[in-house]
Amino acid sequence: MLFSQLVEYYEKIEATSSRIEMTNLLVELLRKSPPEIIDKIVYLTIGEIYPPFTGIELGVADKLALRAVKLASGQSDKVIKEEYSKLGDIGLVGEKLLHKRSQITLHMRELTVQEVYQSLEKVARTTGEGAMDAKVNILVGLLSSATPKEAKYILRIVTGKLRLGVADMTILDALAILYGGGKEARELFERAYNITSDIGYVAKIAVTEGLDGIKNVKITIGRPIRPMLAERLSSAVEILSKMGGKCIAEYKYDGERMQIHKKGSEVIIFSRRQENITSQYPDVVKMVQENVLAETAILECEAVAIDRDTGDTLPFQELMHRKRKHEIEKAIEEYPVSLYFFDVLYVDGEDLTLKPLEERRRILEQIIKTNERINLSKAIFTDDPAELERFFHEAVEVGCEGLVVKSLGKEAIYRAGARGWLWIKYKRDYKSEMIDTVDLVVVGAFHGRGRRSGKYGALLMAAYDPERDVFPSVCKVGSGFTDEDLEKLPTILEQYRIPHKHARVETGMEADVWFEPKLVLEIIGAEITLSPIHYAGWGLIKKDTGLAIRFPRFTGRYRFDKNPEDATTVKELIEMYNSQLKKITESASS
Ligand code: ATP
Image (cartoon, rainbow, N blue to C red; front, side, top):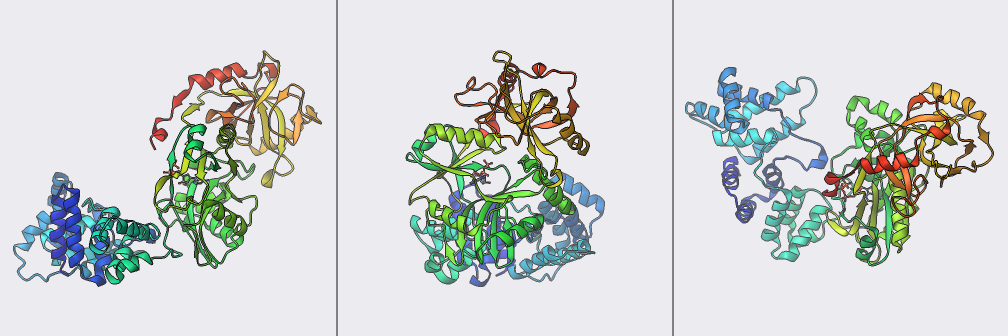
């Protein structure tokens, strides 16, 4: 097929503002496409050359592409620059400047789709030293044979700016019309796409094997499955009624979603958007190799950054360290992750996506060898709104975003690529950001692990309630301590050590060591949240909940100048909670 024929369709698609017409044009284009290259045509039409999960991208910078235009057109830097700032679209710049050249070029060879595709593939695959020059040379070669219109599209594709408005879903529509006929067929095409994430592959199967082939598309290790997603509601009662009265509720961990494919010792990790992120997580690869007891498997988990000394959950942002290539080794050391598995889609040749969740979870329990860093998502089965509500506050307090509540029963399959009511997320509607520090009293401690073994890993902190003359707990703090602090804290605290919880301390937590409330420390946190295990302001904001500080950190200030009764009071905490309360509008709409 000639590239000019493809470009003709691109011109028409670009010109239409009707979705129906766009689909019709695609149907026509796909009908005319030679079967052996239909996948390539599909990739080009969405501005790619491979499915995204391969990680091979064109992404040539405009600057580099302009260099190719300059060489192919023979124009000066000045002209190129002027045109680029005037037109703002590299495609149009190429089209205009190569037009001038084409008037003097008499014998141009006609480009085929295959040739263009192969050259673009070369551009994408050229790496290492001298890669930039090599990429420019390939492009110059292409542009020299291209008509101005062809050049426009080549340049847009190569810089990742094709923007015809065609998406995977539009192609699916066209394929279903062409090879399926009817709405029912569309679902089959969609499933084939959802379990392979590869629209080019689906097109190829459709053209070579027809509808039967599409029905037979199977889950394959190495091709990511598009993720199942949740709807959202904001009350436990509503959620339970939507779920038909009973559910499994799981912590909604605030980390990075991973879809892990394992085949023997080979492990591939895909992100929520089906990118291959294996290289960012060599530690996870190892954990999976050692703890997933299945030869082949596709599993889903949330990876959460944890404090290496206390094992506490850290905010999601700490995973960003993994995105910088040269810092990965350091990130593994400083921000290790814990994995919480919540689903299994495939095990040893068997597709589990159509099995009910309870069964998938049972299988998950059998194939995951749990330890401190690998576990199943914490879950409860419940039919009681009050219990669901308590579990929700518990989740928020330990650093989770809330819950993902999941449907039970036969219909609770894994619906790849769909956002539906089988999963409902229950996140907080309000958030109370902490802008001020608080002074809290040490009432207990937890033994340290790892680098902190033999010292305290975290302290249990309380506020003061003058009306009742008690010290209700508000958080467990393990962050912000220097090595020196960790060294001296056991000595400072030894004099206050008592064999059981102090009579004036109120908490739902079990500390390893208890203290008389004496030592006051300054603490800052991310926000004040409701909690079922910390007792400050118990029942005053909401039944069966107190207030807690989320992601607390020691500021470094010992308040030896303060008596425990001078600590931040419960009343102050309530005021802070109320005055800082604001609607989380952005997440409420997500
Ligand atoms: P959000 O920004 O709320 O995470 P989202 O669009 O990424 O939204 P949703 O389907 O709305 O995804 O919410 C589910 C997300 O929650 C999953 O993508 C996953 O990353 C995360 N998650 C954390 N814990 C769980 C769990 N136990 N089960 C399912 N998903 C979980």
